Image 1 (cartoon, rainbow, N blue to C red):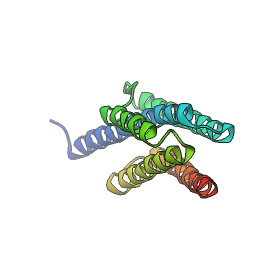
Image 2 (image 1 turned 45 degrees about the horizontal axis):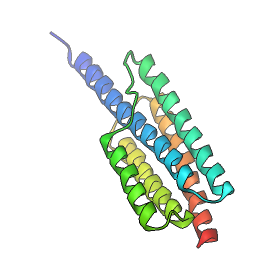
Image 3 (image 1 turned 135 degrees about the vertical axis):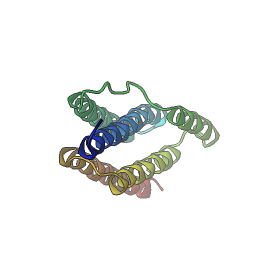
Image 4 (image 1 turned 180 degrees about the vertical axis):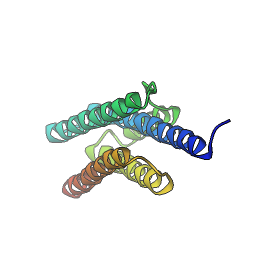
Length: 158
C-alpha cells in the first residue's frame, strides 16, 4: 500500500507529464503553423520573421522533450488534430483572402494569443516543479514578445 506522500508524488508526476505532453504538442503545432504561414507570406521580411518563430518553437519543443525524458517519459513526437485543423483553416482563409500578408499576420496573432492563454492556464491551474515552471515562464515571455512584434508588424502592414 502506498503512503499519501507516495500517491501525491505519483499524481504530481502524472500532472507534470500531462502538462508537458500537451505543451510539446502545441509547440509542434505552432512550428508547423509558422512554416505554413511562411509559405503564404509575400514579403521577405515576413517570411524571415516566420522562419525565426518556427525555429524558436522547435527549440521550445526540444527543451520540453528533454524535460520529459528526465522524468522518464517518452515525449509525443507530433502535433494535434486541432493543429492540423487550424492549418487547414489557414489554407482556406488564405485562399479567400488572396494570401496577403495581413491575413497571415492575423492568423499568427490568433495562434500566439491561444499559446499565451494555454501557458497561463497551465501555470495557474497546476503545481509544477520549479524547473518546469521556470522553463514554461521563459517560453511564455518569448511568446508574449513574439505577439507584441507581430502586432507591430500588423500595424505596419495595415
